[in-house]
Length: 356
Length: 245
Image (cartoon, rainbow over all chains, first blue to last red; front, side):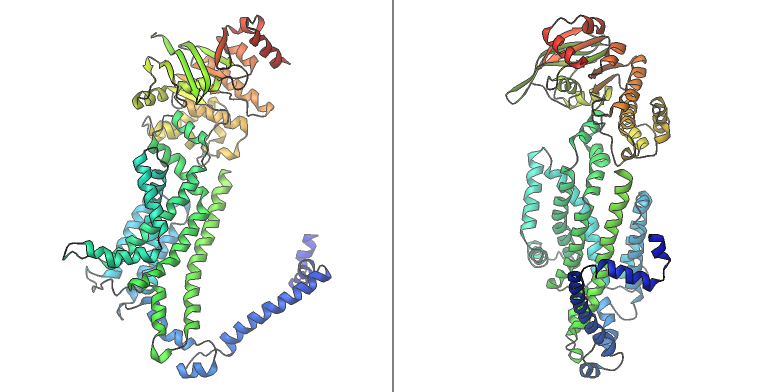
């Protein structure tokens, strides 16, 4: 039967599918027609806005007249949205840095590459990324208050996730520790951090923290924001990982004890690897959340992707094209978040197949 | 004292108000095979789990190879190196392949190089007739195979004493035999064994002594021959008649 259908031409197969899934009873047919009409309305509107009324060339006045999607606005502003205040003529540097970052991330996605070599690769990549971004050693120096846009968002997010993860593991282990002191430190830390919004942590790091420093000691603003993000996310990661830890059966600990493995070895080789596999979905959930939350650094005047977008809207010549700007930047966020989500599903599948 | 591998004196254990083990006295000679049986809840598992300190006890003393088992971590570590254990539910590490399950502890605890550990592990896998599965994961094996892997895994630490906690109770009937065969082979090698089991055929074949426990006490202790054919205690008789039916 299925073979027969699959031999028929596409259109006929599509008709069969429609009949089977959308128009199998009169009631379903009516509902389908209504929903299809509704979906069509939406698509039609979007299509008209982008392609029919859309403007490809000209200035702001042409766009305003047409009332469609204003591509010239994007042509004009993409450079600022993506790179912020990074000096003109040096844009190849953040571009290369981003490519290195994305390339290294891409290379790291295969679990069978997770070994010492990968750690070396990451340290080399990190060096090049910061060299390209910051300059020195033959490149013109670009201080990090000029960094912005996508490279800044990617750096804040990647470093945030990579550093908060091990910190989260340590906090989770501490919270499950039998030692009261360790446990209390972890509980207090996690509850305080989770009890306040990220904005306030960022604000404290940027405004209040310098007040406590001795005169003359200056602590980089970007670094402070990065540390604030790491500290904030690690509390959430800790709770996610703790969930995984408590789902490991007692028998695993007993088997490890019986074999004479130390606490450290038991955790490192038996318990943590299993726990973090179990909590892949909530971990990625937290990671996606933090990727988007990096946009809050705008309140301490860092020009991340969302802030450069907002700033580009303030250009008096191009007022009123916020929809275009947000659709554009929304797509960029979506691409990264969706990739993370897809990747997490793949990891889950891969671990699930072999081991269960 | 010195020739006894395990020396248990007046061992008592409570779970809150519940008195699980009452005045247990037991000595096990080097190379001796002991089968412990008794109704469920009689404290057999708890007793053998005390021997490698998976359970604590409140009163009495327990020596393994002359080392006292107390809260001293060094002693616990020392004893766990000498005492292997096989569990009812195997407790293999599901995220590691069979061979990695076996070589982990020798490499980490005994600091063996990977190659030596792998060679040794393969020998033990051959002994339990499962070498061809070395690169599979526990989830891909049957219960009987898993239990044989678990036995091989504990052997890799070259323990002097091997504890079995109902090793065949979680298995489908047709898989019990393959595990028992391995255990019989092992018994012939001269390792000291304490086995909690209801497999009476196994007890007759390999045990030097059979111990009957009920309500936290050792009620009877005898050679298998005497134990099965001429039980002394009323509870033993009752238990045996129930098992045989």
